[in-house]
Image (tube, rainbow over all chains, first blue to last red; front, side):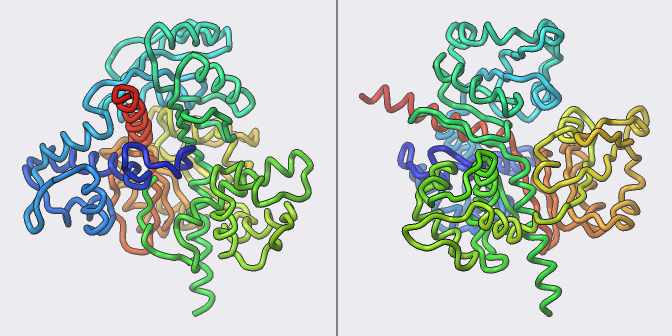
Length: 227
Length: 227
């Protein structure tokens, strides 16, 4: 996925390392669920499909963790990575755009389990605004009118938003969010958003991800042809 | 997003470059739509938020394109990148798992516009199998029973599949796909899939993407505190 700040080193941690920390955290969650109190760097690296040298280098940015030759305490490593990523607290998020994708994300269990709480949903369509949507925690969330977006975001100190509108309205929604103080945006709209410096955008470009797969498919086909 | 082959150089192109090629292609599509017949490396780099040095290095893997000081012909660059990525043809894809997310992807216009055709949808639930779903091209696609997955994939030479099942059934679906000859898989299930060497998996981990945003939010907050 593209990152609007992929050349900066926020907090002294290289962007590629930041991108891998959530994957380590997810794998550690699996190990913890299996009752493993310690993991070796080889086990963790293997779970995330990186080399153990890469893993050790990544973790070195988080300070003294584990010692050469012995493993990491699962619980300690979870705490350190969670704290580095800022997910040792709950983040309220809003989703703007309640088509199929927005509603799919509203009920996505992966968010609530990993530090995020769906605070509100917004749309423009009069026939959708007011509908109640079931959230993963069993609560019902009413879709709000987009005209209430700015005031809601300011009142509730929302810092993270997800855009699931069509490409044609994504920039306008993005501007509205940024003006209201949201500086971290995940977007599924298939277009590049223009944001001021200091605003982070994660563009989830599903067709681009598939095109990476076709590259490999084609390369495999060419290798077969050239044998 | 994580890539199960991120340490290999398929076709002599580094994985990071492969990951950026679809972004260049998307930006070039925008330039083309604006009627721009030539683009400079600065313009294209700026649209994708990389340095122009990075762009030139990436494009150098694709052979002689453009010349120093002058721009690239938009049409030529689109053709070269499309051909490198293998998207100068249409790829049929199947989606396994027809919950909210699967249905959202089934109607995702970004796929059909960029080289992919939804060939079939699969699910296990008897109350969903048989339902007709509208595809972006206006056609109706009937959800098939997952017991027909292997034979369908073999008969129709499907090479790319998208998994949108819950985590609990993702590995089983993945095994079924790989056994039937699908070696390129995009998965939204929040778990790491085990695949044999030679199979490419793109894991779309939405919570991990959000955690990258919280890292930046937290870093910004800490910077303010430390002033």
